[in-house]
Image (cartoon, rainbow, N blue to C red; front, top):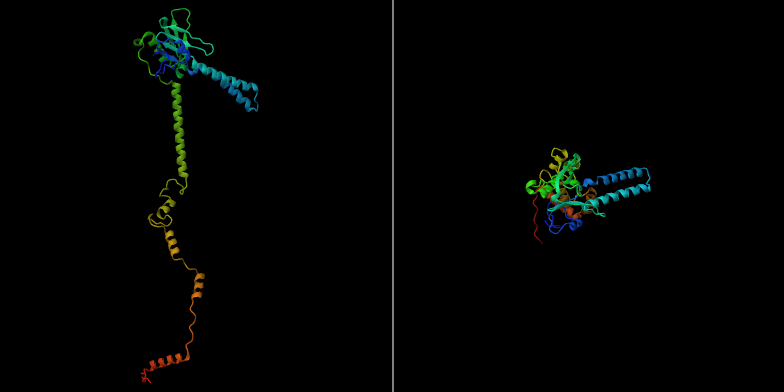
Length: 310
């Protein structure tokens, strides 16, 4: 890989910064480029946490001295500067030499040719094994060494094997080992997954309890047939009977009543009074006499005598 070229998907070759590109020659192949582990920031982080603790304690007593604010802002600025410096510092190895980029304002670039390296050592304490960092020490034949160690090296085993393959050849070092997460990160990921699963289970139980407490007239699931309310609703829902497709009884009664409206007592009385027929008039005397004669003839079985017309 040429200097300043693409790094691909190799996790042990970070993009080369401006300072590293200016240091490398045109035909050098970059084989390793890593930044220090984030654990290198433990001191500024501890200072920032201490300043925040003092700030909280002071502000809880309704007091806010100016010096406390200055302390908090100074701690935050120191942490931001160290993070920026870590992004610019790097440890690199090419097919010809190993070098280190130090500093942002005051630059320092110590280097060592591969032919001068005689021994290397990897130190990884317990906390380094938990968080995934270590220290790589390089020994040379000379007395004065401008480049001796790389502290807080990330993925120290993989970096150590990559240096061995660069210095002594691929056949001696063997293939690269896969990079795995440190135990602390795996434990944190497992705890986060367990917390998410517990939160999801709690949310589902709460939803189920809310569904059970939801009233029957809401948009929730139907009640169980064992419930008396649900049984009555299933048998006769607003007068529909057992057949849900039948028209409700209340609606039928309403339609019939609209078609044949009932007549109230007062309305019936007023209608009778207004539509009652007048009493018949008394017949005249001649008519009454003729009716009596006809009735008498019928009683005596007399045959009436027919008189010729005049």
